[in-house]
Length: 519
Image (cartoon, rainbow, N blue to C red):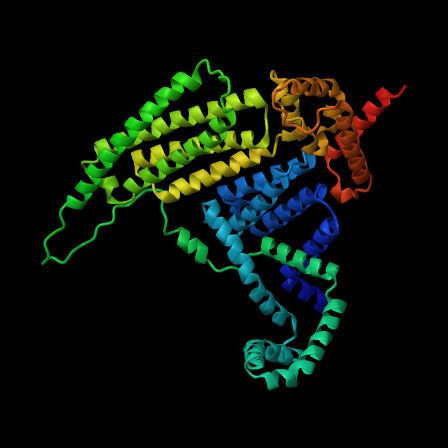
């Protein structure tokens, strides 16, 4: 074995990070997101699994890994906005959970990611020193360079203070400082080009994903939290009288009065909504459906979240173990159940709005948020019933949000929204302008259904209030052609790293439509 080969094996982590950074650079420098992101996710997952071993991966790490692979694949298949975001987040979480397998929750895994990248610069300095041969002049110079960093920083601070405080000193050093800055700028521009800086960024990203540098501080903090509440007894000296139950009893009575009041109020609200919104809802003349849905929905969602906070406050400590808290628990669970009914009412408000105005991203977002709220209410019910901790709620609900967001990446929402809106039963209230704001994936759909778009324009022209810009078919067609031309120009100039199946499918369907319309 040669000395160079032995040196490489001893520094395999550095070699792997450099190779990964080189691949990252080839995949992403000057490129848009496409198949390159999925390729990088596959590379990092393979390297991390090879490094830590498949058997060492915890269940949370495996879930995050599956999420990263699915979101990365959906970046290629659907090329939606949420897919690359979730692929990057899931990859970061997977790396943290793989290198710290005892971690259980996504919030603490996020802190582990942050701690790892904060510790990376010091690890890089230590690693650079290890690359230099022992007992050499370069090693001695490196040690002196490291020792001089702090004195140099302090000296610069005082140098600036003295310049500000003494005009003659500032005049004396102005030329020297300008010359030093010019020299530094020339060297920096020569050595650190845009591509060189990008490669350093790639190296930092890959090093932080492939190896753990942070201490076990985040894990130690998380291990202090348990899913199940434990009763904390405050022991008093034997010569002091024991504390009475008066504080807990007063809190229990106050909580019962509060929950009785809010349950009564919410019962009235739910009764009104069930009678008004659940069955046979119709939009009255001159009724502001926008205010009914937007402002009303946000207020009711806030009330549900505030209700969850109140329940958490009431059951924050030893009240969970108080033997007389049976009715407090019953009223709290009744309030949680009533909030679930209120959530259904909020969903129906949003559904009526969709039935009147069609689909849009915000309306889908409200449905997704309500789904997560329902999960939160269920876990809150379990928390009260089985004495679960706040950490349990945080852990379960963040994993539920992760699963839902990964699920959202698996749908081509732009095409789904356009398909629903084109065949909507209320064509005079569909936002025609929004068709042109969608991604390029909807171009074939719009060209194939221009007659439906024109019918919606005709209905809009009959409205008393016109709130869309495109009411003439030719103007819409011109804007659509311009959007198509921009897409074809972009698609024609793509490198293989930027390719995705959504663009390929769009280009193929546009070619087919052009061929069919030729005389």
